[in-house]
Amino acid sequence: MESAKIIAVLARMLRDVGQAEELAQDALVQALERWPETGVPEQPAAWLTTVAKNRALDVLRHRQMHAEKEAAISYEIDSQLQDAAPNLDVAVADALENDIGDDLLRLVFVACHPVLPTDGRVALTLRMLGGLSTDEIARAFLVPEKTVAQRIVRAKRTLAEAKVRFEAPRAHELGERLASVLQVIYLIYNEGYSASAGVDWMRPALCEEALRLGRILAELQPNEPEVHGLVALMEIQSSRARARVSAKGEPILLLEQDRTRWDQLLIRRGLAALARAEQTALAPAPATAAAPSVSGSTRGFGPYALQAAIAACHARARRAEGTDWQRIAALYDALAQLSPSPIVELNRAVALAMAYGPQAGLEVVDGLLDAPALQHYHLLPSVRGDLLAKLGRHNEARSEFERAASLTQNERERQLLLARAQVH
Image 1 (tube, rainbow, N blue to C red):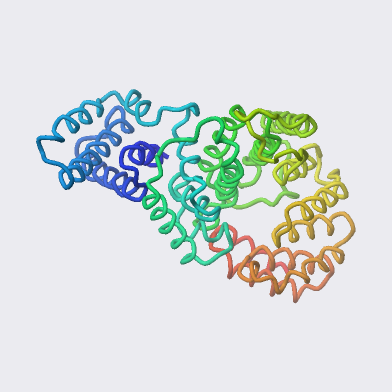
Image 2 (image 1 turned 60 degrees about the vertical axis):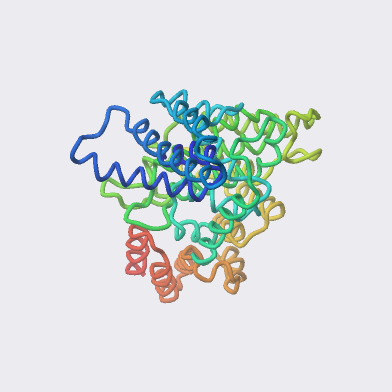
């Protein structure tokens, strides 16, 4: 996360996000080389930023020397060196002065510039802010890793060629980029909630950072239902964190979790955010140019608020048996109409199975077997295996669990799926 903050400062100076990322990495490498000998400084973030800014000033010096005489640029360089004062707070404020008030959130809006296509905005922001690898982003998007790598390279090149000013948008521009920003925060949270790869099932730091950014955004855009909907979704999902993993780090599925371990404070905050989403959805859309509505003249629940409403159904049930699955199925029906996708259909199949029996869910799942986006998605055979097991078709269920285990790159999830295969 410090890397992302440093990139934000350097991008503002250099007007080149690719070069900013390289210099930030150079500073981190220098820290790895020096700190084992000298010890970690009292203010490591300030140390890293100072080193990175000095490297950026060297780059600026060389750029200027190619265009102007040395005597003509000496005053400019001296001024820049003076700006790179050791006072980090002042330097960051000078580099990123605007009306947002959070370095990381500024960088989200910068990366979500309209000059980039949506997939490029999201991939670049996840790479810079979330620290996700191209492989992790690819799994989040259900696309090949090579595709994501190309998106990131193209996005950096586009920003450089367009000479985009590396500063956050003003108030009247925020609404234009809000949808992409919400998508980015949502995907960062999802990677933290269910890690796509590695030995841990969760990456709590990503969840916490996404939730922090969401809360800040909710204060910046108080009239947007979807902002509050996303915050509600993340608050309620986060409430289950302690119950989702055993003492040994093993995954615990939703219906098997000890609900007394769910964080009631986060649930209350999530339900309050959902109520705020409902209120803003019913209120007339603001007509001021300074705070445009992302949904235009049409108000109502969007996909994040609908997912939050689904999460609220689970949160309100004291026991798994008390879950209102029929309401959840109805909410998934609405979500499928509003934001259709194979993933939504797969989740809808689970809700239908819980509300009306496994055969109802299996019929929907079987209709997804040829969906290109799900061919390598491990949760498709996992869900199908669960439904087959409930129908007593144990040999088929075993094969599905084994296939799911072969597709996941998360070690904890693989162990869970193989264990379920052995049971059947």
